[in-house]
Image 1 (cartoon, rainbow over the protein chains, first blue to last red):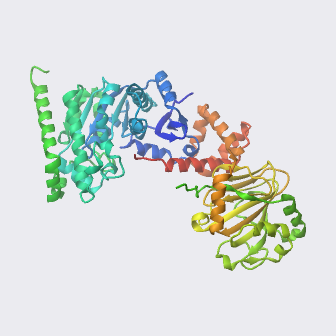
Image 2: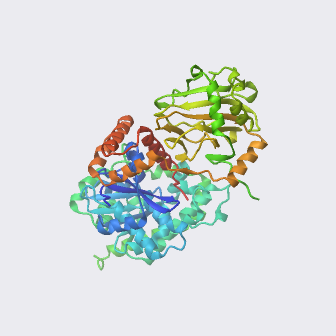
Image 3: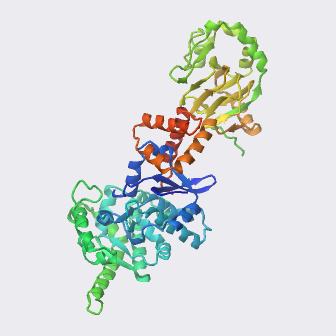
Length: 330
Length: 271
């Protein structure tokens, strides 16, 4: 089997078991803000309606064992609407980097356990590693893979850390008033009760009061932030990063963290002046604008459900910065 | 509570007829009575029909839509006692009833009648009168094991296409009827008692084998993926298949493409 140039697009749930579905991408790079945008654009070509390819998970594991791909050099966990796409686009500007930004097939891989609750952890690790290796196949001589996860994947932190114990990671977050304003303006699918299984968000169905959609969203974000804080407290290799540090943090403390090199700087600077989700427009921090749009109701919901965890995250981040700056920790 | 499935794409029905008797009636139909049928669906060859029951009572009135009381028998039906007995065996009101002839070497492209079907109170029954192993009735991407004298319900919300690769014409009696309690009971009986045999269409199997070769041939992949114009792409796939000795045609490729498109569009993106 020769899968050179093929990229996994999803896991399909067939009658005879899960199948990895691959599409031929050739040298097409994953440069769009989101993985799915690149695959959907490819799928316009008639070829892909006829010649998508299916393998078993074991075949993907065997293929990636023989073709390990570019190593995973960084994972970006985040609370959504907080600049993670900007970081993704800064990295995607590097010719030597593959950036998988919220890739659907990795999400599928992280959900296999929902369909197969008796899946052994060792097998889940093999699956997740193989999926990263399949996404990280160098099709243009790249030597590094970066994964920007979906925000709920922080709940799979332990698995991802076990699978990639040497990979540096960050948890990115933002003033929750601004995140909630963004979610109210354009809700994420996960923030709408019923689209996602609440367990994916560490929520209970009882958390859903149909009259209070904003509370559901705030509680989901609270769980994400708690998991991010827990990860940084209990595990190594991670940094807490606030949106306010972007885009400059990429040239500062994230630069070494993600193993970047001096020659990477010019391309990254080019990407950081653009609006990450709409690269034809320019990036500007919109804190003030979002703060101005926050209703009293929204501020009350944030104060109840999100301010405490945000304060904890900030304390932990500032403490770490302080320690890192101390002369004892060069 | 045991509820039988009522949304199956096709079903063989618990009624069958003497095919030789049905064929005997054909002698009373003048060759000139056959008029072109489904001309916008003919891919290759020819398809003709005579109408046994129509809105105007004329043998060339192909309009199949309308309410049952608008339809009446054409003069031909009185001359075809075996066909009439087969039609009368279905104890429900009839709309359009016709004999359809798919000529030797002819094929019809895929079609869906989205507004016909059990949920729309319509029932379309196909009774093969003359058929062969070279004839394929393909419904929902499966070839029905439909033999002469059998009756098959085809839910025409499903993609449906006919191929006659043989050297002789094939003939079907097609009855559009209105669902009533008797019809529901018959469909339920069919669901519970009859295995509606079907198999992968010949062209689909051939295309599947070709696809495996493409997966092993990066140069051919690169050549095909570069073709973005859909019709040119289809032609290129058919001719690449023919060069390698495969027997599928453009309709088989179209059908695989539609299935691939549908499968992608219908994927679940959330849990």
